[in-house]
Length: 215
View (tube, rainbow, N blue to C red):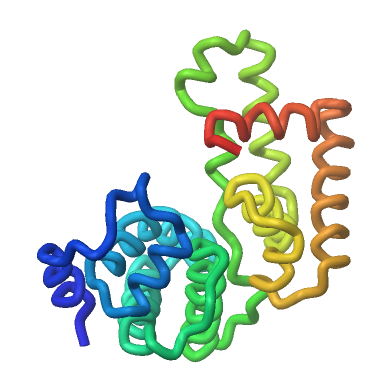
């Protein structure tokens, strides 16, 4: 079953309001009731960050597209049996990551820990921010990016989920299928590495870099 027919048929449905008028809970309830417009809204507001995150889990564009397609098709087909969801973003990130790992292991037997290999490019500030930074700060940005590349795949993923996906430690633990203490440990060790390399530059500057992304 293809996703496009599901999306295309939602144009005529008017059970829900605009994104501003609809709460996440209302949107999910409308979707479960079979409202295709609600489903399209969920798809259109999550596809971007899901693809962005998935490409950091495994750098295989086709695999990412297949996984996201499968998740949304399954979501629609099983909508009536799904439970209450407090965060649609969290629910979908968890589902996509699990499906990606399953597909990747089946494809080439890689272990989940080895999947998160791509650099966390969101740590690069926006162009507008770069314009107001002096030369010294710009050099620190480049140095910080280089230091991030030296973190373990797990540490990079935890930082991405924490600071750029705005997830709680409990949510991160659930997505990665580890305990909360491991999340704390990975965050602490990652920031310690960056702090040692950048002196007192982290986490203060990490938070400043996050600002252009709304976190």
